[in-house]
Length: 490
Image (cartoon, rainbow, N blue to C red):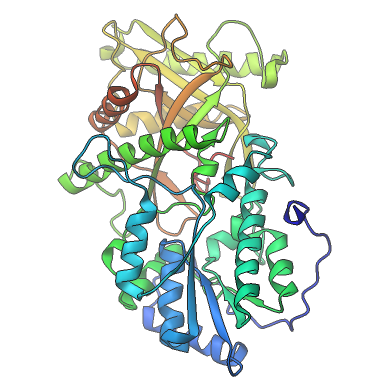
């Protein structure tokens, strides 16, 4: 497959356009001002030739739907062709009536898009994605030519290029990349590479230009909260602009280990349970925003089929003996011990220790612009009845921050269900099967804080997941992420 080979030294044949300067990531900009700047930019740089149209990639997320609304307003309804690709990697929806009816989010999104915009071109590429993703070299190699992010992104380019070729009337290809996407992909004056976004792979521009189509990204200068404001201004329904963000690669970067229909279904259902319980807690007032001005939350479940070290032996990455690994584990254990000593109600714990996952997890960039790669520390504290220790948000954050002062520790999670000595949580490969709950509050998708989720909500999530799949799933919650971290494991 041609798209699996990353192009080198590609130079666009289209004239370089003067871009709109990137907005202040913390600024509130009037949406009509944003709209006018975008329309001026399109007027000066992207006029339509007679008989030509524009194509826009629409996922149902806030960026692409806001862009579609803006383009329809600027070029006119019939000149803009929205295309929705079903990759098979989208979320599942929590059942509204039956416990067994976890529908695919695709159906709900398409209905919302059709109600808002009319006809949407639908391309079913599920089989193609699963087939190509089977070639991936592994979850931890997401940035290689045969890594998941590259495969997903390269297929994205091929599918839209092929569809444009079939039509023969497309002049521009529009996509909703925002300033955070560009920055995380290492582009722009201040970009610090964190991960490759699926619509920022090098092959995209070359594939479309092979069809004499120019790639255009009118939202690349504004941040997520500014996009949301623009979408609301352009008349998007609340269901479209007020939904938790979801990455373009979808569950493809939420499943650690074998990626197939089974693991996608399992992770998708767990993710739907997490989102349902968190949204219930938000609606009832159990979860409140730490900063009311922040408009966005991201919450999801990830399947982590990772090896770990529970205190027996001194194995590091891929089983290699590693003295540094032993030092980190020892330091983390000492920090946890001192922390527990400050709380009299924790003296009845029957089990308290830390474990280090034998894998590197990438958590993005720190405030000083450095990429953070390191080990994940998991804290396990249980009472004799098997219930986890009840620690509130401030205590969790304090513990996490203390643990992340250890060199090479980049991530902290907290076990909500107990590990059994009979290895009932282990898969056929001997690795620990985990569902990790993640939830962050953010203004601009550049800076994050962990969401203040009560332990009672975590308990409801754990009961729902184990009630459906049995007690053979270890459930953990991530907390205390470093500012500026990404919210994906890759």
